[in-house]
Image 1 (tube, one colour):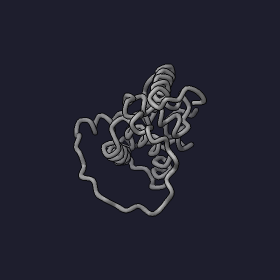
Image 2 (spheres, rainbow, N blue to C red; image 1 turned 90 degrees about the vertical axis):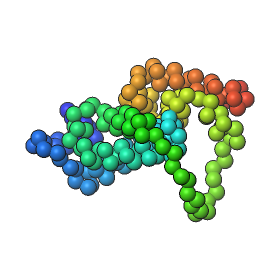
Image 3 (cartoon, rainbow, N blue to C red; image 1 turned 60 degrees about the vertical axis):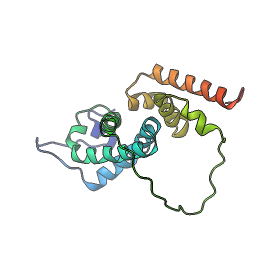
Length: 174
């Protein structure tokens, strides 16, 4: 692993002049491409669909505005997750839903009771399930992202899967 988060994420060392430094659009776009999906999934899992998506977008704005801070933290994704969650909970609001007709597509086949079963999990358990099972992140990546220990990730996942199996009436193969 390289010495700074920018080297780890982008393979380059950035010199800072002490003044606020904005990234080039290409560097920021690549950073956002890597960070946004797990950030959004984790925040939606913990905060709900609307608040989680808004928080993820706010986190990317924060990243752009405070780019120079990201080089001082070991885990920029985890840092943005904590900032977004804290800010969202402080400024919680319920947006007015708008109806948009999506383009036609055949939705994936999903167990009808899964949505209800996921609601019975804690926010942290949902986030761990989404990041590991949904996005394919490793236990270590998930632990770093959520700023919890690897063993906590394993415990959250085991308890979540046990609860999902019970709620869905599944006894084997999952």
